Image (cartoon, rainbow, N blue to C red):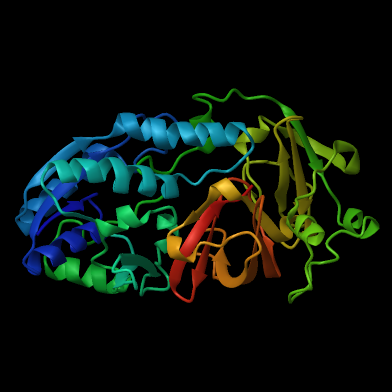
Length: 400
């Protein structure tokens, strides 16, 4: 069996390659160049030449062939252009999710298969299992990684059964300290290397500067919404723990986000473009005069307005539910796909590393409503909600 490891130069993929080699597999290393433009990147972060150098040293140390593949063109089209388009429309994308579904387990997988590989392995902290159903078909499952602090299953929430059939996650059963120890004992050059941060294959960026490659700055008003506004308008009367008897009209009310107007608050400053900001953001506004930090509670790219509230518990940051358009629902377990009228309880997360939250899912003709037991902070259009049954990820979708 021939396995291509996506060797990034980091410790996780290095140990994945080492474990596969020690297990007796025919292993090859493949390094992807996906980005080289330094516009907006913070100096010293994720420079691909350095990453490639470390990856080559790791491959030599393990004793496996090293291959280089340039996927920068497809990465720009499928990940970066997607980012620009989402921000332009006032949504907040997740490039890491798209990078896995469109690059690592799509474009990169095709390159690996062309080299004769049977599987692609990565350094993700997640697990894969399978079973054979009553019709004799093998069904693949994505399970959370054993390390609760490093579980990366969320980033794989858009993978398909076909992609999973070719995927391996050799370190998913390990804790991060164990991975570091294995790398150090084997003398791997990446043993002490810090984990990469920022956008997948781009690194840490000054987001407004990065986005200004295609999105022009445009000055607009920052409007503060005060807490009294919610009391006067009887908002969030449903933001209480527990489930209610829910009818379809209430589903819309629970999942809808409020569209603020400038006259409902007070103008307290200026910004350089509402498409540069996202819900829940605290930094980057540079507006003082508040006892507590101010957070973005909504953006309006049509009117070019940003709405903010004071304090991390500001009621404008919380919502009881969300809607995923039906065409945006993705079922990793297609055999468990919900049909209109179905209602199920799952555990849900709306961002990486968020603890799983109890929720009830309602499938209707127009889409999937997710109503949480407890109101959730920072539900953001464009991000992915992923739902789990215990530690198995069942499906995901883009929040609308």
